[in-house]
Image (cartoon, rainbow, N blue to C red):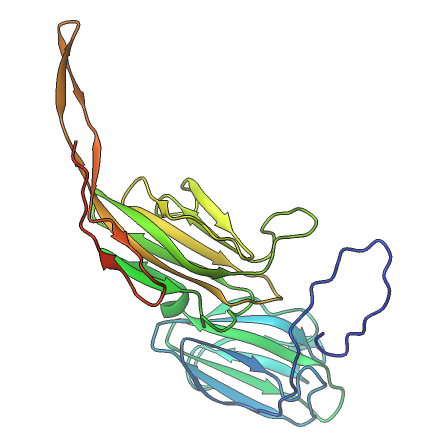
Length: 303
């Protein structure tokens, strides 16, 4: 259970979802690199100290940085003149300020325009709060486009727990005439809702095209074991969404593209010629073991 939350009997309430245990850290600022990570105020989730000033300079080679606050409680006040968090679109406070926040309302999702983001935390001489907890990730980890005929990818930080409040997209885009086959090597997300039986919390979805308005191929969560799925065309989109609590290991998958060929068959019918096409798939690949990427089989089916 996180923070000072205590367990007490409840009547006619929805079941609670346990949170992972916490540890208190006095860390105050630093240089952060990598595709993803976590930032907390000093002593979080206990009250932060007075007269603190912390600077986290985030640099990621993967592209712009997304920062998501999952918890936020600080001293409020008009103009945020007492305790506050300020975000800057660069490595220093000389960069454009993206926002300044205080009080108990969680700041909005923030995306930098560069590969750097500065998080500045300041507290005055009195009145403290729980502080904040935020996750960051770069576009290179969570928004990717794949054009190779075969490959594999996994959720952020896999096989460690993925961050909360993610909206990640992996788009596979092959040349026209190809179809895409997905093999799920590992999947562990937050379990289905005990109330609805659906994937209401964390979920992975696949769409038969390049956008989320395409046909849905499937949605998975918990310890589902999806069978391989195949697109109808040359584009396929996978979307991972996670909520604000209860993270798991995530997923790992492999994909391969297969060429479609048309076999023209002619037959006479009522004095006219009809053209019939049958589909043959070249180069489907078999996954032998999760430790291996793919083993090419180069099988085809003729007409």
